[in-house]
Image (spheres, each protein chain N blue to C red):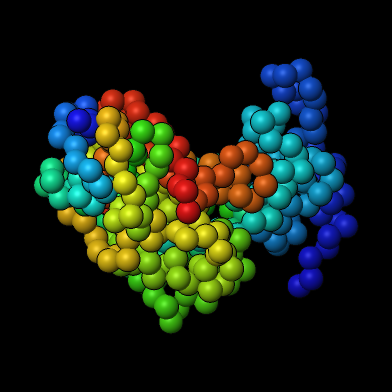
Length: 65
Length: 285
């Protein structure tokens, strides 16, 4: 089990940040995902594993000025 | 007519006065009226008067309350600097005003747009009597009214690869106050090619973010990926986020120009204003 923005989510072996975002069907794109104390930038989503028990926070992509 | 440099310096020294700072230190200051009069007498800009004063260790009175946080030498360095602000809307308007009060000597402001009623809720340079007017030209007029010791070059045009070298000539820092990913990538590319650090910010709702990008840094790809598409902006833009993000941008400009403080590179300053969350993300590049 992991938490994503304080909501519990079932974990599976080999889960990456991209897998996680697909699973929760996040409404908008993310710029940054924080996995425990690691800050993952967008180009690294595919390759970054999410360990069991992780606390994950999503930082939305924004571009307004 | 050539500027009488020695005459100007002597004229400044003749009218400068001692003034106590709240810290107790006394500084020699040059008042705004005296600076304006010297500018007229020697037929030079007020910026030139300020520069000449600070070369002698005399601080324009308008900058007195910057001292102790900044030195006279640092204030002089800011007055010798040229900064470009691309976009004069929500972020840009506040960034321009803040940099003008700080005392940046020269600014280049680029924005193709005119003010519209929908800008009134958040854009610091927008007022009812300015609707329909060029944002860039209004920026120049407003800066002149706030600080005549700043010279503004206003361009009512869209920033593009073909005009970038001219617009960014002599610029030491460029401030990204645009509102689309596509335009931001164009600016980042130009800044990198010209070897200029860029200070990026973006907003949506109560969210704000800021990062500095030096020419050798990965930059915006860390935030927007290789797709480079502008996300939807479903949360609107109340006044808070652009004001806060732009002040952080202006602060970052100061730190870059003076080589002090913590500069947000290869990371992101992320703010959620409603819940008072401020985080400095450091990316493992």
